[in-house]
Image (cartoon, rainbow, N blue to C red; front, side, top):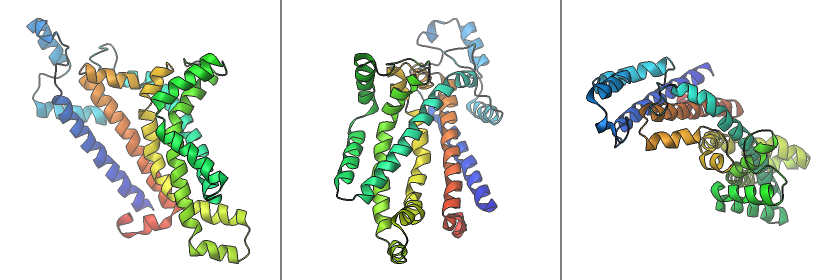
Length: 310
């Protein structure tokens, strides 16, 4: 198991280095000027001073090495938009809101999605199955930028059940979390249903039933444990996708998250913000996949005992 973890960790480091390198190259090829649209009107002495301050006066290879060295030391640089603030400071200030919203959303999605998927499989071709799949179809069909305003208006404004926006207390988290998790609920429900139906038709399930085990024991100990493996595989990427996909929901419900900084940095050619946020989000994705691989290895020992640890 130690070799398996070390191998996955090495893969994670290589992946992060590749992402950082590609980000640097793409960032340098963005159209426009990081000093702003009116950069040509800035006095040459001032412009040279700004380029030197951000290290943009150096050759590309030297900028690249400095870029990697700063990442290793946890320094993502100072923002062009907010010169008095470092990218890491902006992340520390805004990311907790995005993370909290993402965690609540993924928790709702896992509980509701797995429950719907299990019910649909156990009640195959019955009312429970049709109801669960109808909810799943709605989740796939209605994007968060449509569901969000509907929830905000009807539940928040018209009916006054929950706050329509802002980010003040626990009750303010419910509507944006539901809007963000609805599509994920649909994905998990459909995947769990398909996996459950496949497992229920396996010979070892029939054997377990023939031994006189109760339906509850067969479902909990044998069916769900094996059917949940494909779900575990995608929970990691889905978790990161939920966190990084909060932009529209944050705008609708006035959540002070990190999404707005990511979009504005692209429009303004804020090199340090673009690279910093890209690497930050990539590191989260790689970390989650790394943890998922380890969990997967514990759940199914064949993964870590296979050839090459794959």
